[in-house]
Length: 458
Image (cartoon, rainbow, N blue to C red; front, side, top):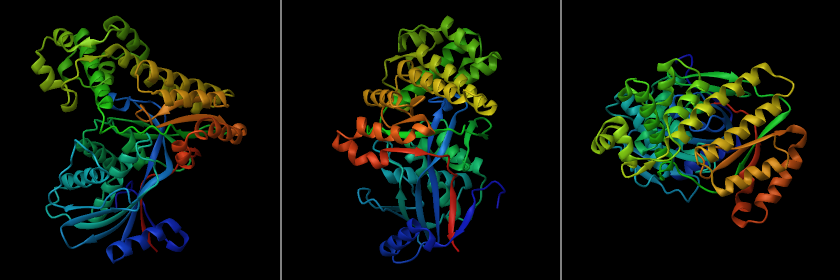
């Protein structure tokens, strides 16, 4: 077993009501008992939004909500998937012929991403078939990484069923790549925290090479997640991938203006690294080089000296071929300022000044304003929810996850927590039937949880 592989924990099922119930449902469904269980947590990103795919560090923590899968490896070459939640339909497929539908992603598509990633990594010629029953507690399309947790869980399920081992870092990297089978050009934060999380600490996650550093959050404040109840699916909409392309195009224009090898550069961090300057200096360069008005594809081609055909075939992703204008200045400005806020957040957590909670709250608020105004990834409901949270005692509040819906995360002094929860419940959830139905799942204080694990019956 690799020393830094996900742990395998023996458990007494009598002491684990959720596992016991999953086992009983599994037996009812498949007529035999599962051999092992795998869990992978969702996450909340405290600060550092939309910058992982630009090469910059982020600061998430795992939450208690997770994806849990009961597994029985079988002799047939078939994977049978079922879900405790009956609104998700059963699915089965030959394990040797994995087809992932990008146009209309369904729940099982994410499982297949993780499965295919592990199969391809090891070049498995006759991978084992499996019966799997899934129980998820992460609200879907809420910005808490339900989809990435499912990809990670499926990757670990496939690894274990085929008797292979990998380190947590290798698993995170494979699952990041394999989620792209569904068309999400993600940066790797969600998969990394799902595997690398540890109880009681948030993590600064840095990329190339992937590494995680503990960030101890100050005592005296709680982080509260509130669901706006507006669903946003990254794989099913183009907003997210357009932002990825805007950052890529900003990278190319900035690099070319500084006579760098722009064709090789993909991420805004590459430009900073090549120039060897600070994030503050990068913000000055953005002001000098890029204009706030949107760029047309013609202007981008002119700046780079390429044809529209070359732009489409060499730079733009499949699902952004028909976009005609791009905002480059605003996106680059958000990324470089947000990257600096992440480092500042970590520094405050390390140095623990007396006003740490105040300072961290201010950084969260600045992050939110930048997401809303520069990155334009908020929505009216999130704006309203952030206002309500700040009004009822949060020192900082921001959207978390991709945005355009999903959740907010707020930092609330512990002594105000109960009144905060009561007031937010009343102001945002109470008068709306749909929100009220989600409310128990939609508003909760959270602590840093542990990463992905395998459970076996003791």
